Length: 391
Image 1 (cartoon, rainbow, N blue to C red):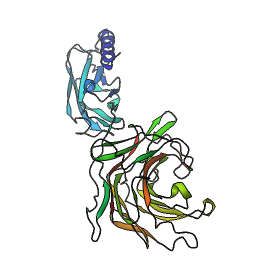
Image 2 (cartoon, helix red, strand yellow):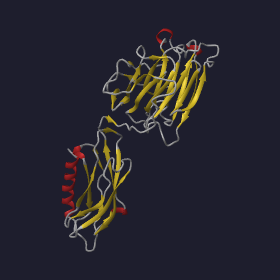
Image 3 (cartoon, rainbow, N blue to C red):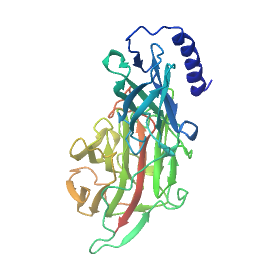
Image 4 (cartoon, rainbow, N blue to C red):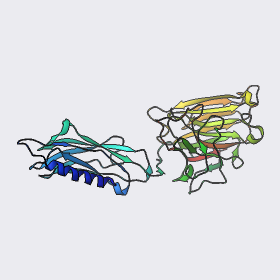
């Protein structure tokens, strides 16, 4: 049964009972909301209808003033903020307040607004205060990504653009990217199953989208890599991205030595251009890993913040490294925050003077970020506007 049919049936029942009540001399009817309204955001439900009832019918016209106010839904973006008057015709005990919903195709969290009664004529507001909650339930699939945020320069003195992926068109470029697949835990007790499905990675509106999704206790995501396709030794590398957030969410933009298949990790070296732990959504990390063998693994790195309550999910930022034979410097929005030199490995091999390939992924769970809980919202996404290499 549709919501409209439920409301109609409710009014029919209410009319039979209320009309049986007599109106005591001088009595004022009590005005109240009998229900909240929760509906999907679609054209069929473009108008949310909130029923109002009187506790008895009256021979006089009753009116009530109201305002529509935001909770998590935004006025002008999710609903039309209005104020008005609802009228109960003489002899009736029901009226309706209508609120227009702004329909879009973007995947969002369920959002709420409220309708508040502010005054009345020939009636009283029950309990002195009445409000009804409208819940806009989202069943869209298109993720909305704002283009706002920091943007890098398109050239640097003494450097030329060697390679880039601007993620134009509607396909992931198979000459640039392939996939890691499976649910092996990836050495960190992660929970996700990496897929090549278009539900977990795709190009849209000039961005590469890597999307982590939940299905019950199962999680899927994507891990793209350029091994054997695009590998680089040294340069200024810029990646413009919006990052996910939430307990147990772990996005990363990083590199491994192209000799990884032959000598393994950590001997091949690892450069983490950016990692973020979703429970600290305004803090990013830059790190290197090295070691002649697994038992000799070492790492070092630094981190930087943007001021709370800002997060890296709010808009684009540019994550960079400046890498040459002498060492590596990490930058956020062109501001350096950590550096290493080629003496960092001490008596172990320094692996960062060979070609490296890119990896971009969104992990779910693991030793470092911990695991999702009831506060974690899915789906989560990383949107990458571009990746550029200058040499």
